[in-house]
Image (tube, rainbow, N blue to C red):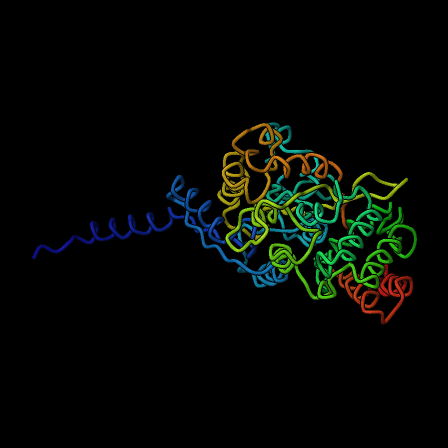
Length: 410
């Protein structure tokens, strides 16, 4: 047997090392969800790696409730992720604590001009961009057309007061016991519903000095409205324990006439295998309040960013831009509406969801933000408790909100 020379062996080892180094490994953190499901995200990632064979992706999926904590813990250990999914409420905290890379200089003029203006607020803090918007979403009012027709109601409500009136008619006629279902569990979900109502009533979370402003005006009226629908027997009492998927299940089972939920519910309720109300689903912008607002909407969008600790920021950014690109988003537009303005004029995107697109055109231009503060997570937790106390009747809406404001330290 002919033995390799020392120089040949060294050359082969060097070649092997070079080949090993040629493959870049990126770790990504995503959310388990029903819009872009894990299977959908992995399909997108597979298409990316097929075009970039020198990059390997390790993707991890966690529930929304664990997304922030997982990101912070991983970064603190020094073995964090390269790409992370983040909520619109986190850029202030992430920027302040050096979690995300400032990518302002990587945003091209074409990106800036092509993405819907409201989407950029998802990734911005103090004038800088910390990623690309990816999931562009707000909460809409979904309604069961068949139930409204049986109740003699010609059109969905334009105001929250009208929604209560219509719900009472539906209940009184015995069409469904609890006409409205919400996601009011003690989680971020209830803050999203509360924000929608707060925006309708012209409220504010914080004043110009960053102090709590939700204890009166629109903030108080929003919580009083929520409590009133429970007391009147219009809201499903289990809403206090529900997240968004619970809302979709109840609504898809034909157990509610109205529901506030994200975009993804439209196609799943209208055509999903487990839906009992196929073809009956209407969607409209969330209602307004007479003399204050025409509609209501909150910013529930999410972005993809590159972490400051990533050893491969260029490749990570390439992955982010691929995942958020118009071709990728258009291919999955039945699950989550694209961030790109031109997509809404593409028949391939709009076909079959014309009503959803019509509502989105209005609502996405009116998205109201949750508070922009590095202390958002603490404030949200206090408000979740306050809302639960009011809904359960263990405290008045006014006192519950006042306690949350006092405990916030703002």
